Length: 252
Ligand SMILES: NC(=O)c1ccc[n+]([C@@H]2O[C@H](COP(=O)([O-])OP(=O)(O)OC[C@H]3O[C@@H](n4cnc5c(N)ncnc54)[C@H](OP(=O)(O)O)[C@@H]3O)[C@@H](O)[C@H]2O)c1
Image 1 (cartoon, helix red, strand yellow):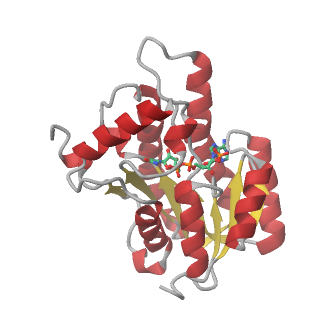
Image 2 (cartoon, protein in one colour; image 1 turned 180 degrees about the vertical axis):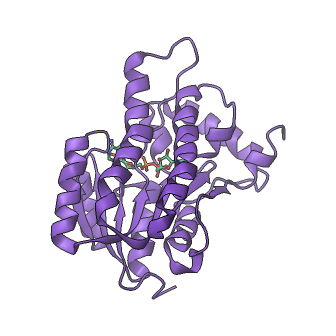
């Protein structure tokens, strides 16, 4: 919808790839001015140029860099209306082989990074702003190898509920989006060999009642809606977007 976000300023963390990239594109198409972030300067620059938006290198796990991001955004736009807390990693490991380093790294981006992104942006969120946290249906599943990943997302959803109550007096809405399997580069970045990745994708797809992986567009449609004033009575919610996998875990 062309003018759905007209006049809004949006920050998308982890906007150089996958769901963040597509959401930034759709937010821009809906009329918003958009800033994307990422941890790799050159990737952020390339994506920002492709999208025709602003880019800023900021590692979500580094609070100094988040402070610098907020200063940059403040200087460019003053205040913002949409904060899409999307940056995240998937680092699987079985219980018994969870290292402290992996725990800190994954929690540091997916949960601590998310919390402090919001914390640091709070002073420049306009009244009526929308914060969207990219979580996962893993928050509710016992999928093997995802104990820490799933916990990082479950923690984020819990945080979202409390923050929604506390931010309501400023009319700031905050919601979580829980995707199922979405076709993005995230699984390749987890270091699986190509063959294993294909097997995993096939097995996963077979378990989805709608029999397909989601596309970044599917999630971006929901994110744009939650960001817009069409969702002005929605806060503290969680939205599964998963082809039904979460309601049918025993499907062969
Ligand atoms: N794909 C799925 O099936 C799925 C399902 C449920 C939830 N999710 C969640 O969706 C979100 C987006 O993932 P995606 O699937 O779109 O994967 P993706 O294509 O890998 O995108 C993730 C983005 O986050 C960035 N990022 C990672 N660590 C960062 C950090 N420390 N600071 C700043 N940016 C960082 C990545 O940058 P680089 O390019 O440098 O890695 C990339 O731009 C994640 O929170 C993920 O957990 C994904």
